Image (cartoon, rainbow over all chains, first blue to last red; front, side):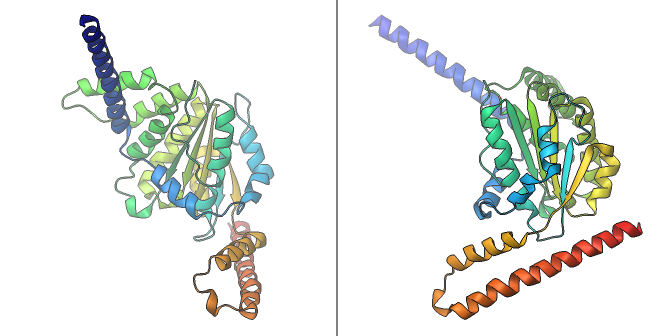
Length: 93
Length: 216
């Protein structure tokens, strides 16, 4: 019987420790920023049609930007897609 | 072993980058600027959000972040993260894996905030060859980006292709909630007139842009 209690105590302590770790993590995330852009992600994703804008991924500029990095000396660390309001920029982000 | 937290499927480029993140140690972070949310989308909150997403890519929050959190909490009343601290933490953590930052609608960021954001991104790039930044915005932000990021930025003009417009129209017609009022003549007219009008509008815009570029 005492063995079971001891085990239960052990489990309880473990549970408490895990909960503390999660509490700390969520506090740190909240401290870093209250903003979570994933909601906006899902809104846009749900409205975008597959394959619309796919031409962008085939451009030389995109391929060069995407393939570079990892220590090479590419000048193009940043890529800007510019266009007027309503042309669908958010859907290609 | 990294997790894929914070990398749920999103739009086109983020989808593409997340595909790679499954195969390799890659982090994908993003931020959507919104004119209506300018007040809360301060540079500190925006850059902190990118770091928050990067941190969530790991099974445990990286030590450099946990330590900074503890240090700031010791100060009177606790203190929020500072931009210099966020940039240092971001660079330290990003050295361990290839990191993408995707920013939508940079033009919707308040001008005084945009200066700080772009200077911060420039600082991140200078210290981290592993980082790549993807941005969208109206054409006028191009000058600011080129000015702040120097030769690090490349520009692609964006507009719908005729194929994009046709695919979009077909999908909208397929989901028509009032099919009873549609007929083949009207459908054919829609499929002809709208792509033509869209193409002309974009062609005019491209011509205007070229004229402006050659003038200034």
